[in-house]
Length: 419
Image 1 (cartoon, rainbow, N blue to C red):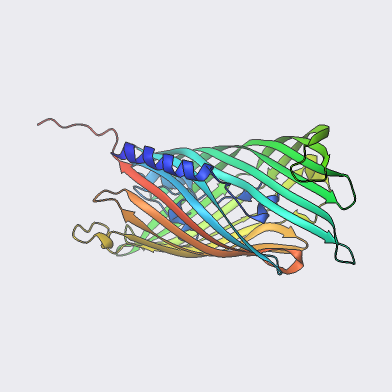
Image 2: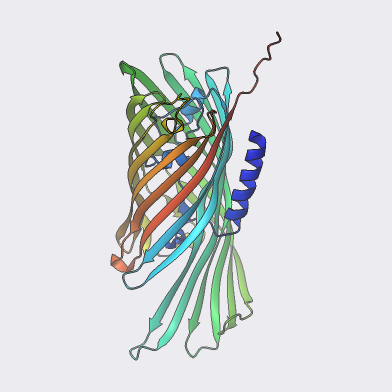
């Protein structure tokens, strides 16, 4: 039964997701796209908090040490839809995009170890921006159309080991890959030919994460949980082609390539540190806080060596959130087994445009709905927030995200008893 549910759900989510662009944000113009939240739906519903959390039957992507707590084989996959209202101070526009965000599996090993692997969305590109120039008589004399699509994914393998004294350790390795296409189409009044500049690039590289968790019973059933995760500095190699076209200054004109050049670039991502702490009762409630920080990302070579009106700076994220389950093992009342989640977050994206830092404020909530009397859950998450501002010739995004995931559990390698 579980296998059928997995197949049907993946088909539905995949068909819906890949039929549309995975992003529609103007801020996906920068670098290799808009950074996805490498979190589960449950973590995002708690304001992206999860570095200190572990579970016997649910995955947490923030800290690989949590995999050591798994006692059930766990299948998870998720998709979502993002709705954006864009405001440039004069005009407003709405857009939406759907995506398949992750497919993963966790396997317990001997009761004190866990293995997890899967594929996750890493960055996404999807924008179409029009810039217009008018003369003193208010006549349109020039237009620039900026557009882009693509993104990167990450395939990961994580391992967690439970040590004595409630100490856990974990490691994760991931391979990042994908392609991005960007273009600029320029049209000018009175000029017969328009021009177009396009880049097509392929990105690849590895990154590594280490994590540790510690828990201590402090009073009655109350536990203190601490977590630290380090994502080591890594480089991404970008290989691409630059195309320059001329075309008739009309709609649907044929593009004629004038020149093609190859380029290579390097993307250096510094060490990222995640600190987490919280208190709660196992399978009852939990409240915690995460704080992560990272130095500025550096782009070198190729198209990144030309002067720009933006730069990368140090980034940070602070998250507060938690969950509450009225009665985890209730048999008579279904709603007492439902887990309720909520949280808030503030993020400095590490991006400065027109000398203005880009910030992101978010509020989220969600529920985990049990499937019958099993540990499996349907997880729903809702997120509202604001990114950017209209000052400094920028745009402000008000976003509304809906996420859905299935967390399915089963017992593997159980010995059959014969009576």
